[in-house]
Image (cartoon, rainbow, N blue to C red):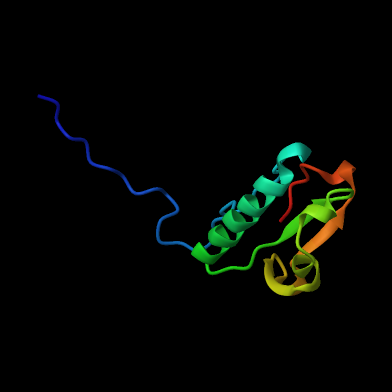
Length: 104
C-alpha cells in the first residue's frame, strides 16, 4: 500500500512579494464566429476579473473593434500597475504588431 507523502508549502508561502500572472496575452477568435464567441470571451474576462476583485483590461486589435461593445471603450477602470493603481480605458485599440505583447 502506498504511503502518503506530506505536501510541502511552496517557498513563497506567507509572503506578498511574488508576481502572479493574471493575464491572457492573446485570444484569437475567427471572424466568422466572432459575433457568437466574442461575447463569451468578454463574459469570461469579466468573470475572471471579478473572481480576483479586479477590473478587466482589454486590448483590441485594429480592425476588430466592431465586435466589442462601445461601452468597453467608453468605460474607465482602475488597473493595478507596478507604480500603483492607474485609471485607464477598460478597452483600447492596439496595432496588430502588438498582438501577443506581454502586458503588465
